[in-house]
Amino acid sequence: MKSAAIAGLGIAGAVAIAGVGYGAYEAMTPAKSGYATVTKVEPIVERWEEPREVCQDVTSTRQKPAKDQHRVTGTVVGAVIGGVVGHQFGGGSGKDAATAGGAIAGGVAGNQIQKGMQQRNTETVTEQQCRTVMESRSKTEGYEVTYVFNDNEDTIRLDKKPGKRLRIEDGDVVTP
Image (cartoon, rainbow, N blue to C red; front, top):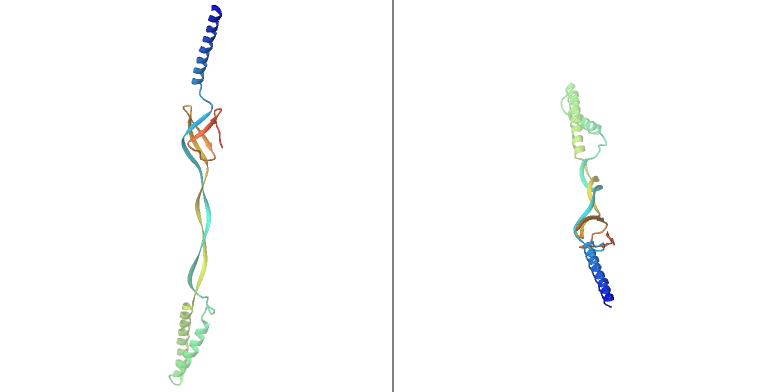
């Protein structure tokens, strides 16, 4: 019986030593599942410029287009009136010279009077003026996440912003 007890103790000792050895092996083997600590989150941002049209109403005053660009009406009317007034002065051939001089002076005056009237003949218009401006746009495409698991630092790209830790299963990050 002593030999059976000794054999039993030997087997029990061998199992105990093997168990301790396996436990030490397990303790030294890094875990493949658990939670990693997130140490840094950087957004991945796409930026671009986009054109946009901006319009506004602008009021301006401008000269109306002249119906009589050469001011013929003013010249003729002025010449007739000047001729009539000039005809009132002088006598004989002097009367004819006064009529002609009055007509010339009246024509010039009538032309200039019509010119001033045309220049003061204005209209106020409101026009829409448009221009293109460039607007800055941006969109977050994802996140570059740095994490630590089993004292090893690694980086992964995620579509959504993570919390303070990441689930690891079989050595891989589990994404929601």
